[in-house]
Amino acid sequence: MFFKKKKVMDEFSQAISELMKHNNLENQKKVFDIFRAYVEEEKWLFSNGKVEDGNTSVLMIQEKGKNYIPVYTDDEHIKNKNSIIQTDINKYIESMCFEKEISGLVINPGIQSLYMEKEYILKILLHDKFPKQNNSGAPQKNWGEGIPEYKSSDLMTKGQILNFAMH
Image 1: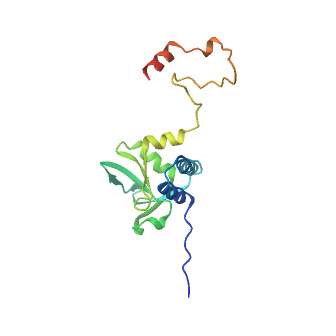
Image 2 (image 1 turned 180 degrees about the vertical axis):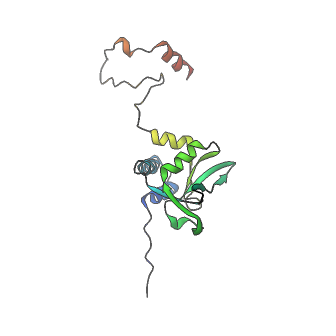
Image 3 (image 1 turned 135 degrees about the horizontal axis):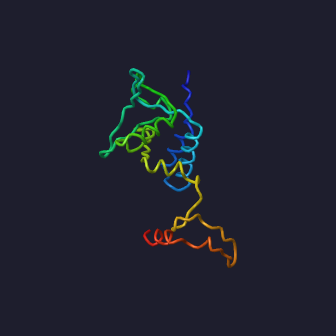
């Protein structure tokens, strides 16, 4: 008797699956870290689409009046095998950013359906890329311990005070 070997789920799918079971900060961080790694390493994802005259178009899905680009971590998740396209995740993100009517990506739709809004994706990608800021918009100071000595450059400018007051 022969048994079909079960395919091991990819790391991204595993992390999403775990997040769907237990939505907590640890699982969210893991999904976001893997997403950032996919972008940095220019990993490829799958989608349904077509190529005509050198132009590639990706099929969209609509949810609650918003358009999303469906992307899959594995081509086995795609039902229509005749129209599979595969490209670097950054191409999907680039398309999403340049097309106003696209609201975001949905990863593994129909299986795990992780919806990622455009603004949220940009926040995930920019996380930890810039120094943390306080409410005034100035970089966060590391004061150490005790009463700090400060210089005039540590004080807020009029613009920073206004920004602080408005937010």
